[in-house]
Length: 613
Ligand SMILES: *[C@@H]1O[C@H](CO)[C@@H](O)[C@H](O)[C@H]1NC(C)=O
Ligand SMILES: *[C@@H]1O[C@H](CO)[C@@H](O)[C@H](O)[C@H]1NC(C)=O
Ligand SMILES: *[C@@H]1O[C@H](CO)[C@@H](O)[C@H](O)[C@H]1NC(C)=O
Ligand SMILES: *[C@@H]1O[C@H](CO)[C@@H](O)[C@H](O)[C@H]1NC(C)=O
Ligand SMILES: *[C@@H]1O[C@H](CO)[C@@H](O)[C@H](O)[C@H]1NC(C)=O
Ligand SMILES: *[C@@H]1O[C@H](CO)[C@@H](O)[C@H](O)[C@H]1NC(C)=O
Ligand SMILES: *[C@@H]1O[C@H](CO)[C@@H](O)[C@H](O)[C@H]1NC(C)=O
Ligand SMILES: *[C@@H]1O[C@H](CO)[C@@H](O)[C@H](O)[C@H]1NC(C)=O
Ligand SMILES: *[C@@H]1O[C@H](CO)[C@@H](O)[C@H](O)[C@H]1NC(C)=O
Image (cartoon, rainbow, N blue to C red; front, side, top):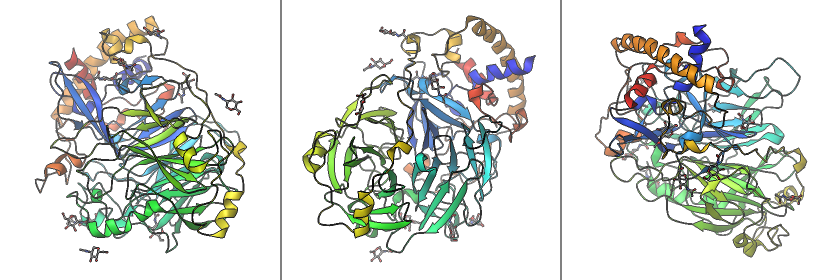
């Protein structure tokens, strides 16, 4: 009887956020910045994984503390359901759900990855590439397999429930690449990871603070990794060397654009010799970076999926050298233009100077750049953008430039942008959407109107290759593209407003989707069960505390650099006891919290809740 009841309590308790790092007198926490996270949209929800997530503690006296990084020790993937309305200044944590990977500190199944990508279709995604922190406590997962989250079933009917599954990468492919550009094309069941950085010997790579020179991701990777998801459970990865004329780079954006028979990949930006791979935060050769990197925005590399061939195309105008922005593409209603929006980023060599807050549009097929918005309010890099609706873009996470001794916090964890008007919005509401219309600043350059009819249909001065004209001349069968909007709107009940005092039990489950009908019986039951669980867990915590603390290699700040001390994504404060032992759940079986079965939380979260009383 205690078993299932215990799990229910655990699910609520595990939603105390930033749990590894709560401090005495702390009463709340908020997302401060989220560097190099990975994202994938499955139908109505975006899944946010990994990255370096910093929490800003709030104390009882109203002050805010130095941001701390919990290194995702509990092994969560966060979720944002597009049915949830929010405003951009509210506490974003209250609208995020979470999904336990069964990884985190407790085993080597799914350590926290910074950078890399979630590659997927509408049914599943793979946690590919990226950097782990090198620690003595956790053994790295093998280099030749990858974790996949199968959320929905497709293909032949079989017994199915959402599940995390380890899958082999196959011959010739490893997960040892990071800082590449990722794109997914659900309508083709294909996804790609373009270029990026690797280690000298193509072996294990670690976050820069924990890597030594031989396993830092310091060399450009000249490969295109392709994932074919045509058959669920028989997905195939392949690894192709890029042609000589397509140079490797760090953190480009890759977008899949529906033109030609199977679409094209368009690579934007990225730099060589980036400062972010270096422990000191300096570029290995600034001169070379300034010489070579601007070209990645002015001459665009294009891969034709059906023809399996790369092309290059010059553009008009453009933002210059940029990396770590985010990009999405919007199709004019008549298919006469495809407008790629690129937001934020920085030059990749001056991480202590202001980051871009501009939205640039690269309009195809005229290959014309237009600067659409420039607020200069809050530049950021290392964020992700997704399109819940054809006319809206959500910008999620990222980080501001490294100015000052402590990490700066983002004002808005999530920003909302209207692709049609080119304006930032202060809220997202699933009930408010429209068809995409080409913004007037773009229409001025390419002709036609909001609904299409562009008159500039070829690049100036000419196509980079005559075949490109043919590819753009062939309409992609857009009926292959499945959409899942509109989303039913399920607003949070008004009492999730943090300004309103909440009943104690409510705040314990504060991160649960508050639109779930509150069932009084369950709540009262929880009060009782929580008390029981707290007693059990406190007892266990005391045992664990006696067991000593986590030790990590390579986390000492050896050169005293002020940035390095927090930049490396190390949990810097409130070192806490090891997590509950992994014997609490079976690491290889399905751990899908959507179905209400959660991995037990780290024991400290219970203790923290006590602290907040
Ligand atoms: C935001 O919401 C989360 C989840 O409900 C909570 O843990 C956190 O303390 C809240 N932060 C603030 C600043 O209210
Ligand atoms: C998102 O929210 C809607 C409305 O509550 C719900 O029907 C849907 O199942 C949710 N999606 C996921 C993946 O949980
Ligand atoms: C956003 O939400 C916060 C907290 O719920 C509230 O204080 C603020 O007024 C809201 N802003 C807008 C523009 O609705
Ligand atoms: C791709 O293939 C090359 C050549 O075989 C190999 O050196 C490299 O490690 C592979 N890269 C990845 C990411 O699998
Ligand atoms: C650096 O890492 C490599 C590979 O893990 C290891 O073989 C080597 O001993 C390390 N070097 C130092 C100086 O720690
Ligand atoms: C890191 O930056 C230093 C300068 O601060 C430079 O001397 C060194 O070559 C760089 N190392 C790498 C691997 O980029
Ligand atoms: C940096 O790059 C420039 C231009 O490519 C080159 O001339 C110079 O030798 C490089 N410097 C170093 C230290 O590698
Ligand atoms: C979008 O356009 C389609 C066809 O042009 C039309 O049927 C539909 O009503 C439009 N949707 C909205 C939200 O205006
Ligand atoms: C929340 O409050 C607003 C205004 O106070 C009201 O219009 C809205 O219906 C309320 N929503 C819910 C779910 O109670």
